[in-house]
Image (cartoon, rainbow, N blue to C red; front, side):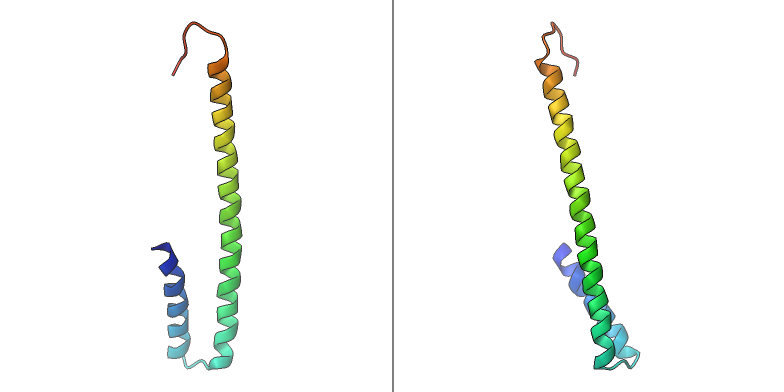
Length: 76
């Protein structure tokens, strides 16, 4: 489903430009800005994903270290 959203956005933008009477020369800059925005969004999502994976790995390491400590009882 998320792959379709990009096409819907581009189609909506092109439809809006066509309805407003824009020519071929006006479509290219709009599409270029849409592509650039998509690239920036992808980079931000990748950065958030990397941070989330890193934080999850830290939590796993802390939990393992806590479980490896010699105790008679472990708290869950």
